[in-house]
Length: 162
Image (cartoon, rainbow, N blue to C red; front, side, top):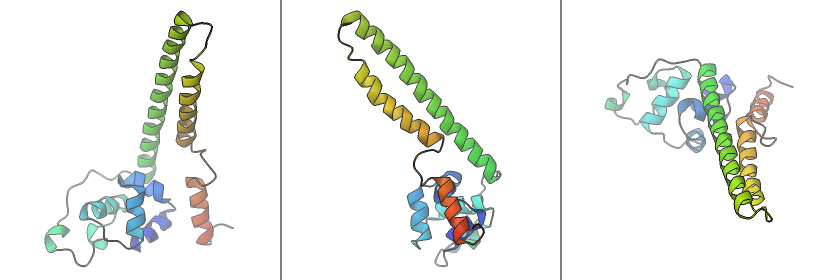
C-alpha cells in the first residue's frame, strides 16, 4: 500500500514511523495490510510524510473529512526521532534513580531489622533485571531484530545494499 511504499522510501522501520506519527506499530501494520485507516491516523501519517492528506485518504471518504486540519509545524524526521529518543532516555534515567533509591532504602531496612538474612538481594535482583531490559531497549541493543536490522533488510530488499 502507499503508506508502506512511503515508509520504505524514507528507510524507516514500522517502529520509527509509529514513533514519528504517534500511532501504534500495530496500527501501522494494519494500514500497510490494507485495512481502512481512520481520518485521524491518515492525517498523522500525512503530516509525517509531509504530503497532503488528500493523497492518503480513502476514496470512500466524504467531502467533509477532506477539510485540512491545522497541525503543528512539521519538524524533520531526525528531530522528531531525536526528541523521542531523549524522552526514552529520560524515562530510563528516572527508572534507574528510582531503583537506586528504593534499593538503598530496602538495604537500610534489611540491615537494621535482620542483618543476618539479606532478603534485599531478591527484590534488587528482580527489579535489576527489569532495569537491564529497559536499558537494552532504550539503547537499542535488545535482540538482533531491532530497528537497524529492519532498516538493513529493507535496504537489501530494495537493492540499495548488498
